[in-house]
Length: 308
Ligand SMILES: NC(=O)c1ccc[n+]([C@@H]2O[C@H](COP(=O)([O-])OP(=O)(O)OC[C@H]3O[C@@H](n4cnc5c(N)ncnc54)[C@H](OP(=O)(O)O)[C@@H]3O)[C@@H](O)[C@H]2O)c1
Image (tube, rainbow, N blue to C red; front, side, top):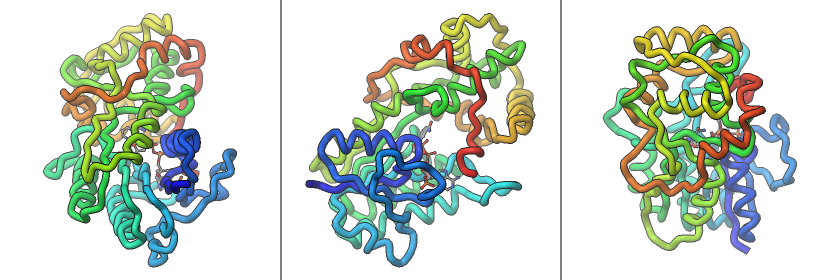
């Protein structure tokens, strides 16, 4: 039986990748920093993330490594351990090196749409750096580049759910600028998981997969589609970027969360969450919203509370 090690196996996409791996007959080893903090209902064998000197031992006997580890933004505030993109890049580089030393046959690495080594945005720059590092190591690998994820439940689909929450609870919604000239291609996490395990089984030395969803929405049209499908009538107002960001910051603070960072607004409005290439994802966001219209946005989902 082939063995796959999956980082973030108790997290969001990692859980789906693990379930897909089991379905395909793989033995799963979960790599996590959160054993004891997050539940492990599927009872995966857990090992610590291999950032340390013992990384090579942790990965010994593993055929394929699937990496979902990353941090959404850098944070150094009260009530949580600090985390940063810089640390995530260093940790991931250590992970790749450990995989190489342990003789892992292939790495499937989850990246982002439009990684960019020259971007001032640490998320997109860090992702580009890691893609290049993986290539330079010479380890056979596949890179998956998803846009925004949505999952089986509204609770885990933070961005879409919190847009829906805003529609339910606020008198109007806003776009950064017109909202008509930048786009998103949300992809179901099951599509991502299936692609990850298809890639785990491939022989090619180097592949890039555009793990985007089949539907493309401008930010304005995403609001409209959500409101329409949920049966909520709201004005969608164009706003200067700083006003939209200030509103999201106030809402985030009220919810003891970070709803959207300034860099995320920049990434979104620079049209980094959609690509021209053929999408590899199949599942429709619109149909998903129709199925979940009753529960979507009923409660706010906090990113920070997941890291407590
Ligand atoms: N979610 C999206 O909408 C989206 C969109 C585009 C691309 N992606 C990419 O898809 C990949 C997986 O995303 P995901 O949403 O499934 O990730 P996730 O579950 O939130 O995070 C994956 C793992 O990274 C670790 N992690 C996350 N935040 C951390 C923090 N603040 N401090 C320390 N460790 C942290 C956790 O490991 P432990 O559980 O071991 O602590 C977690 O299980 C990432 O590479 C991301 O860039 C995601």
